[in-house]
Image 1 (tube, rainbow, N blue to C red):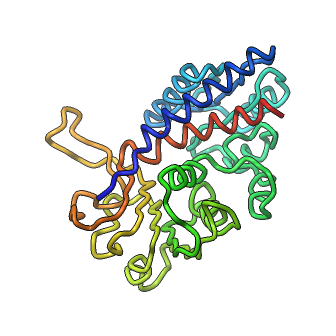
Image 2: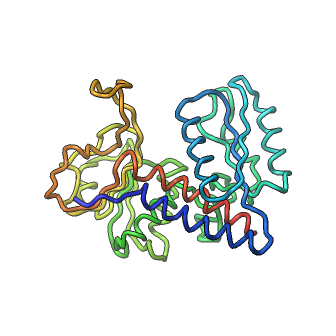
Length: 290
């Protein structure tokens, strides 16, 4: 079994970004500036935003955090988005998901200026991605592609199976892996909750990407020997051995996979998560360059 270390790769990318930022400063250009809006007190969201701010500090980016109460209305949130759209000092920003249930998340995301949409969620960026045009691609799929590239994993002509069809991971992942590029040129199968004979399909995958949010859903009998497994899931399960009483785990039952299986796999935590942050910063640097 070969571990794909997303944490180490993310640090390497942040070091590269730090050098690029230093070069910008030497040229008399401004530091890239990333902002985030967070609504409510979701612990996971707050932790994730905190990681983003720390990454900004490490890479030499400026960062701004806009914190809004749980009861914030759609109109008030749209007003904050408009402020960031019009703030020329901010190169890119995100609206941290999930938003409270009473807020129309899609309507909010559509208010973000596409040129500042470093999360890649605006319909303009999604449309450009589908057409193969330059755009901001969602950070998680971009991070996965970067891992495949840096680990020298061959994708051309391979069968990639994606579990999950979300607009954040599954759908853009199919576009990135099927495009005429390196990494890319895969034959892609997208599976979802209505897919029949799922295990037969996953066993045919040279590259299997699990992004369905169900702990240990993918078991060893569903995996082809020597396959590349990208585990996007982040699930919290009970664990009496931990002081907190719980731990994070992925969609893949990694603990059940035999060491002789011979493939590559991303751990949870320490796999895809850190890469998402690194690619968000990379998008922000690109936005600053424009």
